[in-house]
Length: 153
Ligand SMILES: Nc1ncnc2c1ncn2[C@@H]1O[C@H](COP(=O)(O)OP(=O)(O)OP(=O)(O)O)[C@@H](O)[C@H]1O
Ligand SMILES: [Mg+2]
Image (cartoon, rainbow, N blue to C red; front, side):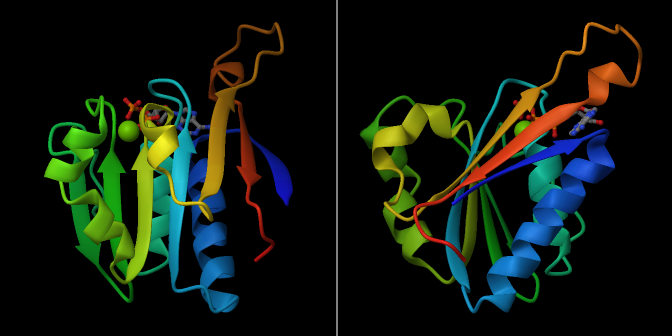
């Protein structure tokens, strides 16, 4: 399935993350990998913040320097940032395989860097800027969010 959602600000991006979490849980999917794609500053952490907030986790910070932040709310949320990951050895050294097999949800920023290591059933979330040609303040906050997965949920 594929869905495209247009949002107008960071709070709306968070809401899309929140709604995805809610749908996964409602559909009985208590383990999933959400692969996040999109350029720097587009809203990948904002999306993750919204997703985690559904499980009562309200302190999501960017894992850019730590590669991985793990949160325990009503469910476990593993928040990866693959920005500095360049090969399978790097992934191995952070325990990637074991972590994604663990309970709960994994979200990975900069999944572009690890495409060949993404689980088969990953949900692909791509965030991109929308340009209307109008250089207003509001325009800079427009985003298109594409949610894609092999299976419906
Ligand atoms: N529609 C929007 N969705 C998300 N963030 C937005 C939006 N409009 C403006 N912003 C702003 O853009 C920034 C997005 O930051 P965020 O850390 O979520 O991006 P990121 O994709 O995780 O960046 P990085 O690649 O550096 O990890 C925030 O400052 C946020 O307020
Ligand atoms: Mg980020």
